[in-house]
Image (cartoon, helix red, strand yellow):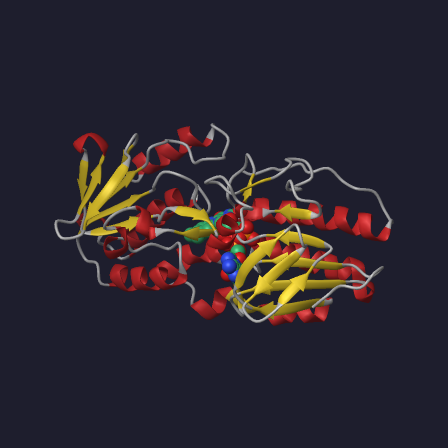
Length: 331
Ligand SMILES: Cc1cc2nc3c(=O)[nH]c(=O)nc-3n(C[C@H](O)[C@H](O)[C@H](O)COP(=O)(O)OP(=O)(O)OC[C@H]3O[C@@H](n4cnc5c(N)ncnc54)[C@H](O)[C@@H]3O)c2cc1C
């Protein structure tokens, strides 16, 4: 797929929160005069914040999935494929079966979960950070009648820093509703008391909220490994936590294709200009969880970045309107 002169091709990588919003705006603003192409390995957009409700049986997978093909109605061509290479020097993206050239590239590939980074994690933790494990957690919770549930977070970035706090409170509510809260102990561990990327104020009320719900908070706790046989989370300095059910967030890292192609060179993603979201490569932008921004890895952030970037690119391409500034607000 080569792009022709005058007519611009904007390629959006990723059909998650950031990619869908950016492609939708660009398709609407540019109409049939230019080409907007969105690529994702999945046929569906999955609304990940609802994984917390999925784990409690309050949503089903089909309630939180929408076919990306619906974007075709908005002048967006959708290609379902694994993205295997990105070459900014040739303005080219390699898919499984073809190469696509772009005039503008928006990268919104999120973060990938890396259970392998904590020994024992894959066998031990059931968590709502992926659809498949959220469904297994739903089963485990439904069958849980008494014992110790430990919720916790790894070092490094992960999707939605406040979500594990919400998870522990939702578990508290779930067991109260089932009338067995007095038979279920809930504990939480984290190194940093406040969720990364958020303002410092929440920590006070979050800590209070957890204590009011009788959830013990273990701060400064750094996981080294998990022993699934003995059901032990092993921390630094020989601090251990025993569990019957472990709900730990997996470590997250940039998508492999971003590491392989050299676009992401930090643990927290692709370096971007904080105002324009431009990378060091011409006409290559990154938004959402894969962008190394001083902000929470959150859908709300991805959405705001996508709004502003799509608007500013449309202004640049059409010469109509004025660019706007990026003013991020999280919680
Ligand atoms: C339990 C949970 C609760 C959350 N709660 C909230 C909340 O309350 N509020 C909030 O704002 N955010 C929340 N989030 C975070 C939010 O879901 C993410 O921050 C958001 O989805 C990031 O959007 P994104 O576009 O950057 O990446 P993603 O939504 O992760 O999308 C990335 C896309 O890229 C695709 N992709 C990746 N690599 C490739 C490849 N090589 N080839 C092809 N396709 C690829 C993936 O399939 C995916 O569709 C929550 C997340 C979780 C897990």
